[in-house]
Image (tube, rainbow, N blue to C red; front, side, top):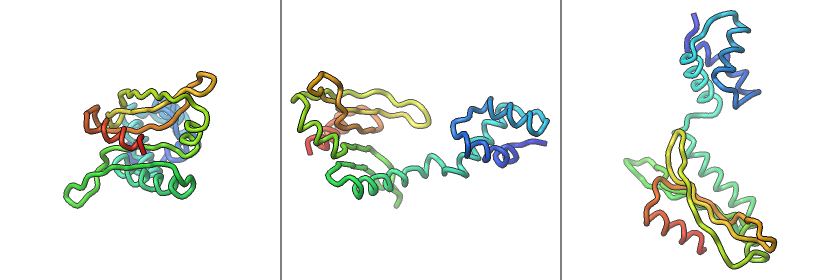
Length: 168
């Protein structure tokens, strides 16, 4: 009998070579290889378990963001990376993020028009939120990335924080 745990065990090999494999494709491969019938829901949940085993859970991925910030600080001095957190019950919870890489800052100062465009769009998926981006125009009127960030909702407080980080 196939269950989510069985699918998770068998799916690990596929996910290591094809991390973006879809549940339907995985279902077909498992059914052909093991000559069994597996429901889509079972495959989808088993795939999620396997991904959690390989890469960690979504909730724990916050620590990766802090590690990412430390690595950018080390490898690209002068870059601005801010991870804003709030403390609740002794635990840190993500609030918002901002990043402007040093090469983008230097490129803007050296060869872009003194004009920036700032906008945001909705993030959909596991967690919702806003992705904010700041771009400029280079000497040939091409878009030049300057900074980006993400936060939970489009509020005045979040925009003020984003603009303060951009001003740095």
